Image 1 (cartoon, rainbow over the protein chains, first blue to last red):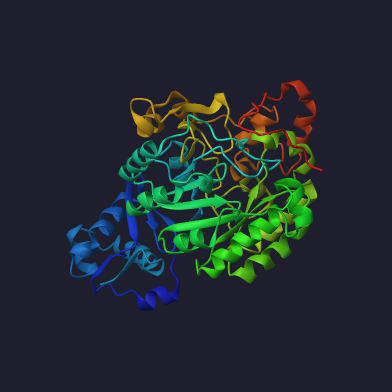
Image 2 (tube, each protein chain N blue to C red):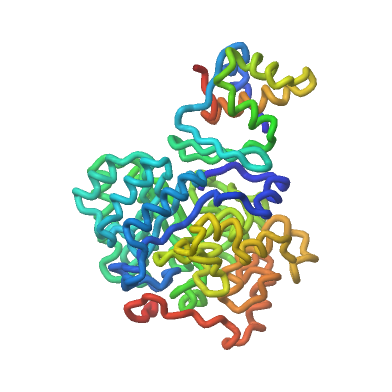
Length: 96
Length: 372
């Protein structure tokens, strides 16, 4: 996944995020299918690890804390933060 | 479907099938007030064996349990069923979104108001040309005016952005810009799909399918308009250059399927033929059993042979095209699509003797119609 500078500007890993209320997540072997009932958009999560993080992201006080809870080491963090920023821009997760 | 373009790795997962379809087409009745020349399901008369209201509710409950996010509903004309809008309510209450196709004739002002008040409901009204002169020979006399009246009523009821759905033929490809303008006037979304030689379409495909030059024109037009919806139906054109948006693969029995009005489950909406019948939702295990365990779907989820296309450098892009288009034109399933953009399909097509095309049952047609 790629991210734009606009995502980078709004995405703040020190804040709490949650799954967008209009969003449904269906686990699959490769990760998950996400469907947004508002935008009618289908998104694919292409890794089980990212899926696990997204599923319980609202249970952690910040994105950083969620990554800690999933024991994500420093080498994996930049890629996952980019993926999460992209998910914010497509309204999969939102601040809250 | 609006979706990310799938990576080759993800496409491989899809080819092996998912635990539940990504989207499912459900034709709720064979009854229709029109008799379009290219009807995929040869609709016309209702079938006494159609699923009852209770059976439809049961199927919706099952789809909700399987987390099927939405269903594409067609027919026939869904609004011919008097319980249809109640079934829509049942579905959206369970978070099974509904996208339904209609010819617009039965969208009364009351129906339009009720439709406008329902969440997770999308409506697409079909026209097959920007004018009655292009549309009516295919969809029937007066059908263009009927469809426009349905659109007007949805707009008056404040429904929001409905879709205008067009099957592309050699007669309406010159009207692409005009169709886009009609959609813009309504604030609607344009959705264009591929003409397939299925159902009654088998008898008009030869004279209606776009020419090779028109296919290229269509591809260029779509590449310049990524927001035009296509239901992923033109992936065979991706061999012309950059892939079109969408999954770009044949999802039959892997990520899509069709449930017909009597509960028969077929591999995709374009193959209502015994050869692609996987089971029936009335069988013991319901829809889930058919989707997960039918022999036919297991076969379709095995790696498929590229056949004659194996030596073509563009196979990765077009994936050999549409199974239904090949089947109903009598071509081998391993090999080029009849509309292969390199012309391989046309060469194969001339080798097919007229008698090699599969017999298409009359289905539920009221009478056989020809264009012209």
